[in-house]
Length: 420
Image 1 (cartoon, rainbow, N blue to C red):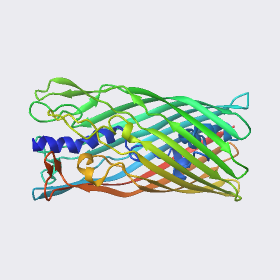
Image 2: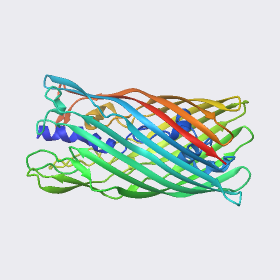
Image 3: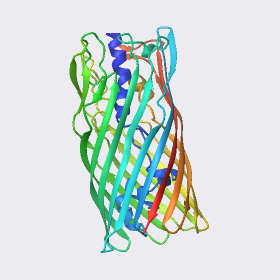
């Protein structure tokens, strides 16, 4: 029974973080190199198509020209899991390689200048990690003693068409649906019951799964120097995920889990009152507590099936600045902070939940090749974060036990903007 509890608790995080990791708990904090180099601050600072579409669709009405922006992020992680149980301790580094994160946005001013159409196709969540099994790290000992190898890979993409309307010269509003698709692979799979021999099957998604939601936004020009913005992204209501697995005899079995992406409320301001400068600040509320899978209680039944992670909803903030150098060069810097949805007391239940950062610094810039085309680069560093707690059984914490999850990460982003 102890071995089952250890395997279940440690893999809860793997299932959900694999489904949607990246930042601010699980939500990617920025889209494309321009938005990334501003720390993700763009709710009231529409300086590129991806910046506007990702955090506030109403702000596309504030863009001077129609625009197409394409960006690709490359994610590099340094992930480590260590544990100590019963006098045995060990540490294991993951080797996930490089993870690509593509983004695309298009905005177009219609014949009636009050209306602007936008389309965003964004990687909003995803992750790839692997931790090899071994005899020196107790939590990664081969099944059924421990978890064995942990492997997870996922990608979530959102397709978001919007229509923004300028109600007055100062006020714009926008709305549109969000179509979400995702695929997940997890080994071992703990969101369904264990096999008859006390081991857990691996799980590969049978197909891409789909879900839906919506977003709303508003953008207001307070005066010539200040802009205000606010947006709301609903929860992504996903269909039940189905996975292909095997029982203890190698025969097929279908595994399932429920997983929704959380709703997000953002407010922000932009300031352009200093010549050649732009300053932006965003504040967000990410509602993990009411998202299926994330907010469900961290409990298990007698078969070893997990119900959820019991994550807390969190607040996040982002600050960015842009400086124009002449007519062709733009330099940017940003800082992002967000609360961690996992407490130290819950570390045991989330050991395989990486990329739960709190502090991020970003830099980047753009170079205009001509009046219509610019190339962009951005870089972000997620400072190391960790959660450490005791191994917790139904009877309480195991005396002297300890489990720790550590991670730092880097994003390299590049792309191109075309205006007309």
